[in-house]
Image (cartoon, helix red, strand yellow):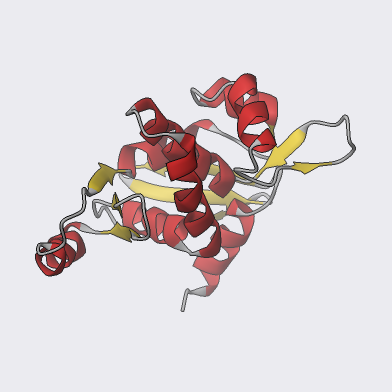
Length: 179
């Protein structure tokens, strides 16, 4: 499904090398939120020891940032737990990153009940035409900016991202990859 370069990028994006203090430094997520969300079972944060720092992947940080954005818009955590579970089980964020690198807008769609999706402009319009008859409230959130800020601001031991002349470059274990 993905090219060799994308597979290496996604593998690096899944490495749990980001400490909680890095996450809180580069996002508007606080230690208190992390502790609260962890105690509610919102995510499974990896720890080296019981008293050790939690470790996150770049994809974890993006997912938690999406949840934080929706929580800030007034959605309760119990509604967002389903979305986080969906994000964990699907390559949605990977698709969003690929869309971003290809300079395509990317949107998160949800009704916060049982429908979730990551769509480009064209896909979203087609999807909404099909869903027009449904009488549920839908939320559409552009996520390009959020993903881009996290990719560029957080450096892990296995991954660094930069943009040169509009081209995304991923440094994985010392080697630059341009997808």
